[in-house]
Image (tube, rainbow, N blue to C red; front, side):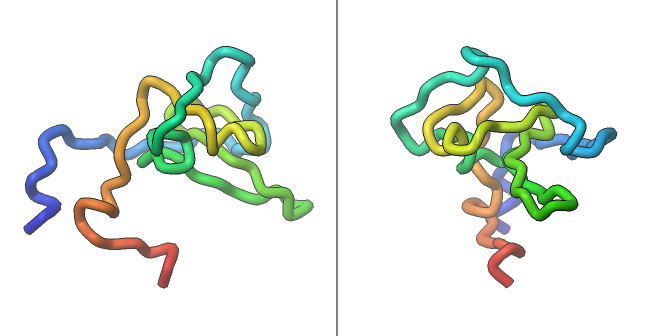
Amino acid sequence: MAWAKRKTPVAPVKVTDEPEEWDYFEHGELQHSRGSAVCMTCEHFTYSCTKQCVTLLTCPIHQRLIQQGEHLTKRCPHWQKKRVLEIGWCPEVA
C-alpha cells in the first residue's frame, strides 16, 4: 500500500477551542513562500465557518487564524505535504 511508506507519523491534532475564539497570526510569525509550500497546501490547514457564514482559515497546530490571502503566500516551519497526495484519497471532493 502506498500509505505504508510514510516515514514519520503525523499525530492527530485535538482542537480544544472553537476557532472563532482563536487569535490571528502576528505579523512576522509566518514566513513568505514563493513555491507550493504555503499554508493552503499544508497537511494541517483547515477552514471553518462562523455562525454568520464567514470563512475562517485555521491552523490547528498553532491554534491560530490565518488572514485572508496569507494562506496563498506564507507558511510556517511545521509545513507538511498533504497525505492525500500520497494515498490518493480526497474526501472533500466526494
